[in-house]
Length: 294
Image (cartoon, rainbow, N blue to C red; front, side):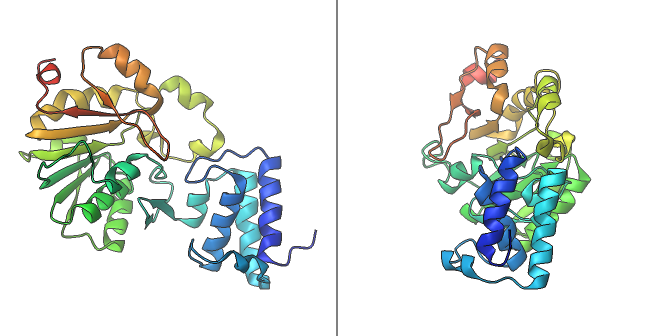
């Protein structure tokens, strides 16, 4: 097959990705979108570019670079965002590499909706993003709540180095404060109106059977003990001391939802639903005595 136009490369890549049974789940869910993401990155084109660009005849150098990345996707099963060093979250572009997990949380929809209807008329002055990784959640919160101070916490210095790059990229230095800390230990006496966390929640059995694409991500950001809840246990125990009287806690636990419900059957979890898909996200209110007294 003679690869000349952009469409030639996209068709070839789609069929090749499918033939190799690649797994899609890092920002895209199909072979065509993965091929497009690689191509747009190489050609430095925006996601909104007109479809007619597919007829563009690529230069020799463009062909060489694009084919190299597509072959790496096939042969090494590297997630596309690690090849392009770009991931999208809440309509914002973020730098990513293997030091952080790739943003894909349904939290994006929650943040863009201003945490409504759960937030109501509560004031938002301080937000805490636990296990911030690339900083995408903290930065998205900063855009939606420009008058709030956001603390972005991670135990990993490597992750915070990536988050710092993204904070600078989005010019949020005065609003987003990066803190290296084991969960709440470095947060001092601050009380938060919102605590949001996408912590590690993959259990030891699940991590062993994950597709190769997920093995590229740092296990520190994925694995959380035998039941996937070792970090969530700590968040549930410590969060009440760091919330305001009307504060809200939002945590993503993914497939560990059932284990969590078995562990805490008395907790008044509110499980969020998302129009764009996603599950395993709960909310707790600081004022709920059933949680506070547990």
